[in-house]
Amino acid sequence: MNKTIINHVKGLSRKGYLFAALVLFVGIAYPAFNTGDSSALTITSRSMSLSRNVASATATTYTFQATVPTGGATTLGSIEVILCAGSSGPLLGTACVAPTGLAFTGSTLTSPLPSAGTPTLNGALTGQTPNANLGSGASAARIRTTYATPQSVVAGTTVVSFNITGITNTSTAGTFFARMGFFSDNAWTTYTDGGAMANSVQALQNVSFKVQETLAFCVGAMPNATVAHYAGDGTTPAVGTTFAGTASITNNCAQSAGTSINLGIAPDSSTTCLSPVSVRSATCVNGSDGDNRYAFVMLATNAANGASVAQRINSAGTFTQGTLQIASASCSFPSQTDSCIDPVNGNTPGNPIGMPTITTTEAVGMVVAGRNNQGRATNALIRTTGAAGYSGSGNVTGGTPCSSGTSANTTNCWNWNRTGNGTLATATGPIDNEALQILFATKSAITTPPGQYLVDIDYFSVPAY
Image 1: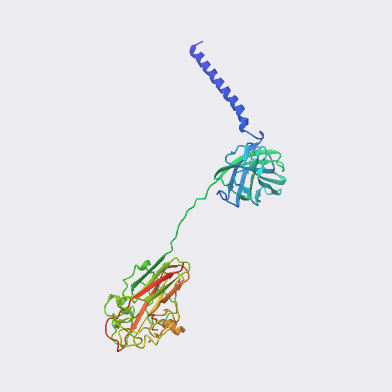
Image 2 (image 1 turned 90 degrees about the vertical axis):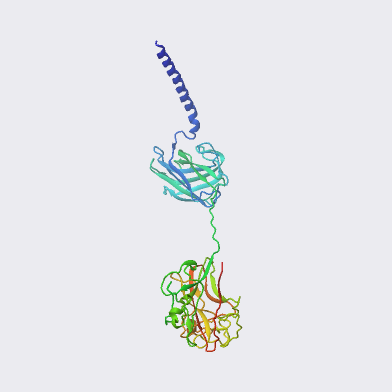
């Protein structure tokens, strides 16, 4: 015989021996992996899901779902599921130890399919011996359900599912396994099909975000034509009126033209000068840019309990009398011959000391004539009304001090607080960049000394978090 052919045949012989050996090994090893009833089929399309995949989470619902395998049993009488720690593995028939910390607290069966045959939960307990086809040992977590009347199922078609509520998840983060078995009788005796499923629990991932207490408060002088406002056109708006129009004001007083308000020069002692002077008291105009402005304050805060907006007369420096005055003057009240303008309501709103009204003789007053809520349906800032308030129209047809608190005075009054804090408005919750429009009016007497009269006003907000 040809030597090459001989060697080839010998090679085939050696390969044949190897193949035979491999077949023999598989034949010996296969039963070791195929534990349980060798006639049982593997359940198909099986899954286990958790309502919360968090280690140690309580009141968790486990949902089990599987399809009866093709060629499998046609009757379903009971089901058993055992839950095994990750170290136990998924292989049916092998030792199963319950996941650490897993507990069935008040567990119930819900949403069973098939739903006929009175399916019930016949125990959800740890430290149990499983059916031998599913596992061994006496420390598994075992769930058993049964049908009072075994149900007919269609192999390859019928979906079997149910929920078990009230489970406390394992405290061990990572993978764990469930092994499920179908039984044709309702006593977990005649095992027909089985399969394993995996899931896991993990520690919570914590995402954090901090919001600081915020306060954005600013003071400005708004050019008259910049944003729509109440201009004092002879009408008397109701208390709480908003700015005319819906134009918004730039946040953080970005539209401000500074902080100076110029009430101009009155041509005589009978003329009242009102801001913005250029459009409301034309005869008082002296050509200064400041006479075309009204004052405003703007507030934004996330204070849950709201905030107040108030003012006080700054007594520092050379203006110490709490009203319009010539620098460093010494004044008495009331007097129309000193170097101070007598304020409406004198010392504090609601506590008048015989101060005049705007329309009678020497006087100075301020009023919160409107609000701008940036086009929203409601205002967060509510103007303070009555004897202690500044809620008026900016109209001098009445010009009455706010001391009486009557309806007419509340609408038309002017106020001035020389010695304390005057609250302009308050809010009970957060405020999103709302503005108050503040107007001034003054009038001199025939005997008022000549000179430049000035005052500095300190506005502030107190948020309540």
